[in-house]
Each structure stands twice: as structure tokens, then as C-alpha cells.
Length: 570
Image 1 (tube, rainbow, N blue to C red):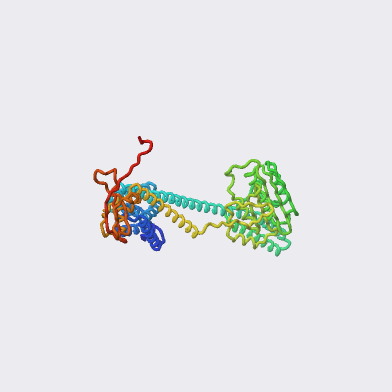
Image 2: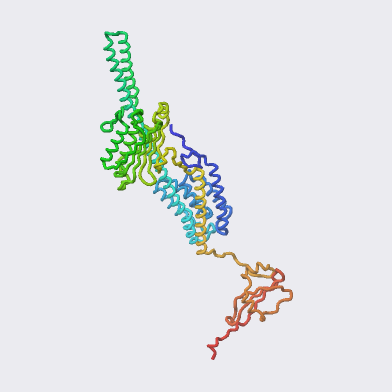
């Protein structure tokens, strides 16, 4: 049965969150932004009732933009042409829509359509909504479409592509990590199978000797002591049963992996002559190897310890041949009463290796780490700060069987994804670098701050564009001016005649008619000239007040005196 799809109008399809509180917060913030923008743009636009209705529709589209991205963007584009204060909610809608539309062709078509709708709507509706004429509406619509739709849409497209790319990279990294874990598990199983084969050869050989000697003893006692012959036969059958059960138990691991040829393990494996033979074999291949052995030989140590020493040295030298051909190598084996330590170091190669040789996959170290851990030891490998590589193993001289069982039952230890820089004198396996990814809360805070700053930038860009349009298309003053009349207040007269003209006042000084006795102050402005004296006289209008009330209006002229420059005098 297919899962039910959420029908919440405030969330994207497939989202599990309810989104109601988020939608309420977005509607509140959108309303605040619209009020702020309308306060800046006061004096232009439709009436308050129409603004309220259009704003409600804008906020509704803003709330459902995740569920219906295309419809919300096209609808809010039309409303931006009618109500410029809806520019910032439209920018948020354009960003979200472009971010959540994965198909590039559809995303581009929707953005282009929204831009055209906003421009044409503003151009045709400008006279009806009180914004201005059609040219002003066309210019304003183009600015609003570019700043609140196209630019946020392009930013949203970029952000959506980045998110989808990161998601694909995370999925690819997860698949690669799963493949690495599977390969490491196979390497551990193969190493355990190889150890089982070694144990099969060792224990099987001992059991075969027991069965052989018990059979010979049974034949020798056939006539001399029949009762002892039956005991010998019992021992032979028990050895055969033990051999069969050993094969059955080890057969659970599948086909046993064995080293063959020159890598085959023997009773002398891991002793000093064996390690010297490995060093000599590398020298014959062109690798200068220096061997240092501190302590007695490993002849008396358990076979699994000696074989682990052999495997550590052999794996280290093999890696030098593969990745650092010609580099000097130092092999140090330290044997004490309680521990066996093996340290293999190589310097930088004479010729830098290629970036990717493709000669190995690192599975040898995984298997080697598994073998050492089963013995209760530790192994560490990584590059050194001065260049080169180091491989260090610490093994107990006498492994504890209980520790081996615990290591076998314990979950596998993950190898670090990045190599650690190791110091040759301070090698210790328990110092992995901790990776502390940024918390989800911090990422949300960073995204919130980025969105806020982006919204502020969009707002500044939109207001700058509107300012330039209003400067290019100044609003005509269509209000009829009332002519000054007696009884008007001083403020009304100043607004009607544009204030007092100091130049006209200076020209009237000493030439004006006498003021009435009750007048307290007067305003002087230029009056339209009439008659043939135009050009030789100045027409002046004088408005005299008693307190704050206009009491008299006088019109008179004063002669204009022109002086002839000295160079033009006869």
C-alpha cells in the first residue's frame, strides 16, 4: 500500500512537518514588510481598502507557496503590479519557487512569465490605482519585476542546484562508504579464513601425528596386550573424530585462504632468519632495507605471534615496493619478555609517485589490523610529518585466548578515512582526530541570517529602483491651488503664493504704499505685469496680516532702474 501524501497546504509535497507555525510567522513577517514598504511609498497606490484586500491575497499566496509554487508565483506577480508594497513577499515567493522547481526549462518559463505579468499589470493598471500614467507604470513594473522576481529567482535557482548537488554528493559518499565497509568486512573475513587455514594446518598436523602413533601402538599391542590395544584404538578414533570436527568447524568460514609459493608459512615463519630473508628479498628488488633486531629470537613464541610478525614485515615491504620504490627502509623488531614490537619506516621515494597508482586498495592493512587485534595487539599506519610512511605493530609475547575471543566478537574498528601524521618515536593507535560537524541549529541560524541579509538587500535594491523611477517621472501636482483672500491664515497664504520673496521685498522698500495702522506683518511676491510698462517696472503683490489673519491685499508697481556699464557710455 502506497504511503499517504500529506495534504497540508503550508508544506511541500512529501514533507512530514506540519508547517502551521512557520506559515503564521511568515505571514506576520510579510505583513510587517508590506506595511513598512507602503509607509516608504506613501502618496502613491490604491486606496486603503483595496490595499488591505490585495495584501490579504498576497499573504495567502506567501503562506502556500511551498505547496503550490507555480500558482503562488504567477498570482503574486500580478498583485505586485497592482500593489508595489508586495515586492518583498514576492521576492521570497520567487526564491522559494525557483529553488524547488528541479526542471530548468519549467523554472525559466515560470520566471519569465512572472516577470512579464508584473510589468504589464503595473503598466496597464497604473492610472486606475493612482500610481501615475502608463509610462510611469511600465517603468515601475520593469523595476519591480527585475528586483523582486528575476533576481531572487536566479538566486533561488542557484541555491536549489547547490542543494541538489550536495544531496547527490551525500548519496554518492554514502554509497562509497557502504562499499568500503563491505570491502573491509570481506578483507577481515578473508584474513580470518587465512588464520583458520593456518590453524587447520598446524592443529591438523598435530592430530595426524597423534592418529598415526596411536595406530602404530594399536598394531604393536595386538598380541602383547589386547586391553591396551583397545585403548590405543580409542585414541586413534578420537584423533580422527577431532580432525573431522575441526574441518567441519573451520568449514563454516568457507574456502580457507592459504598462502602458497614463497609466501607459504612454515614453522620458522617470523623468526629472525625469516625476517632477514624478507629484507634480503627486498634488497634484491632495489629497496635499501636496514634490519635492527633487539632481543632474543622468536623461536619459543607461539606460532600465531611469529606469523603476525612475518605478515607485518611482509605487508610493509610490499607497500614500499608499490608506492615508494627506491625509498630507504628501516625494519626494527623489539622482543621483550612481555611484548613484541615491529616498526617499519620508509623515507620519501627518490621519484614522487603518481597521484593514483591503482596498485592497491588498502585491504591488506585492514586484514593485518584484524590479525593483530585477534592476538590482543594494536597496529597503526600512516604518513610521517617529515615524509615517508610508518607501520607499527605491538603484539603480546604470549597471547591470551580470552582476549582473542573478545576481539573476534567485538565490532570491527573503523579505520580513519584520512591518514594520520605519525611521529616515528610516538606511535600510538588511540589518537584519532575527532570530527565535529556543525550542529543543525547552527546551520539553521546561518541560513536564517543569510536569508535576512538577502531580504534586506532586495529591499534596498527595490527602493533604489523605485526612487529612480519616481525621479525620472515626477508626480504632477494636480491639486488646484486656492487664490489668497482676506480672512485666510498665514499658513494658507504661504502655501498659495510659495512664501515670501526677499528680492521683491527689497525692491518695494521705500516705494510701497503706506501700510494700514493695524497691520503687524506683510508678505511680498511678484505679481503678473500688465500694460505697456512691462520690462520697465516690477509688479508686486503685498499681503498684510493682523496677527495670523490676512487683512489687506495690495498690488502696486515700482520702477526698475537699469545702469549702463561704463564701457558702453558715450
